[in-house]
Image (cartoon, rainbow, N blue to C red; front, top):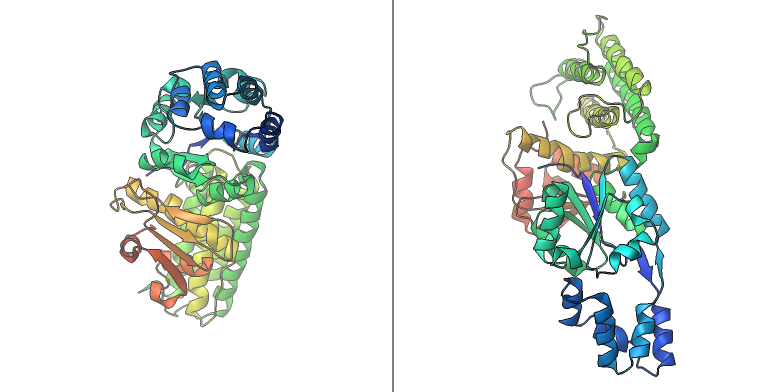
Length: 432
């Protein structure tokens, strides 16, 4: 199991758009019934011949003219203009700036090189692949395999989006994470649910996570100042509040060592709350003193300070929940933070468990959806097919279930699909 390293875009309908009114105007001018031209042009086997390079684009247009009985109309259709999608191209720019490989795979003709050159696409992405050169067209798995080989990547390392749902099949077969494109906002949400948070490139999410981490530190300290240190922690069997505080203090010290590259000494204060606070303050200060993309050793990719801000936010937040519950409080988790915590579990912590040999990889894909937060989260199985089961519930409830803090039957969720696949996932040790 690996994280996403590349984003693969379809061209037509995603990065550039043709204008239906142009075709309609041509058909009116030539007394053709609406839809006549494209019904012929995109019918098999003609479309397959041009998109696999067996005939040229010019031959395709001539064939369309012959079949509709109006070569002039076909020639006019073949010259129809298109508009690049500025928002999608801007997204591609952001992805490259954040270190992701970007590429295009289109069912195209021998006209593609000149067409993409006309709006500088090669300057905006790392590679453009066209089916007329590959010899196979989407959804043929061989087209996608060609891209993986050229980029030296495995299927689960690639996110693919296409405006045709049918053309996602070959990508799914190779384990790619796929998205049916209907607009740039939905694409951004799908990227977030796959663990690609582009706001980190500008640092705003990084700073927000540090602020939330500092708030969680304040909350945990407050419990230590007022609570019974001998109180049992129900969600951590066998532990008292003292044990929980010691654990979190050690985790913060270890994370600080990974962030700075130097082994850290334990905080000196004898008082439990003072000792916790001293260690947490050192971690927060070190994060604030670095950029999100500052290189360091991290628990999962990318190896940057941004990963530690995210990881320690979720670590501290879940243990604050544990501590508040132990002293009789009614802890609550903020929905957006909890949703990102779910994405971390299924997209980063579970793959790490597999990578370290701690658990066997799951075969079935499980999707978690949140009505109270943006996006969704996908635990990708090895079978390479679409989701076997979809689970919808509040982000807080789903996170607590994944961390073993709540049994599934104790929260309100909707389960669509094979319940046994979900049960198998929850029986697996998804987190360290």
